[in-house]
Image (cartoon, rainbow, N blue to C red; front, side, top):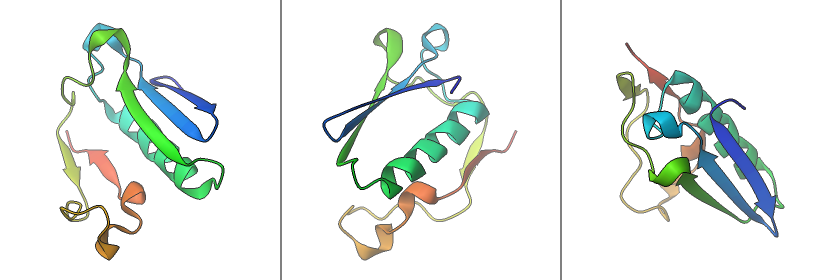
Length: 95
């Protein structure tokens, strides 16, 4: 992966957004890699929890391209049945 570092230990997946020179601003490549990682974690029974963090002292400043969800936003409660499959919602750059 170009924009993420993914580490696994004892069922915990740590995903580090790794564009510190841009304060980890999400671009199209990062969004694609995040989606693939979310799907992988969702499908792997050994992965129990995921931690999302940013390299270089910043979490994520902002996307570097206009982003839209092609499905409605996630419901307010993650426990809601409507959240099933949220990790596979397609996000894409629109600009």
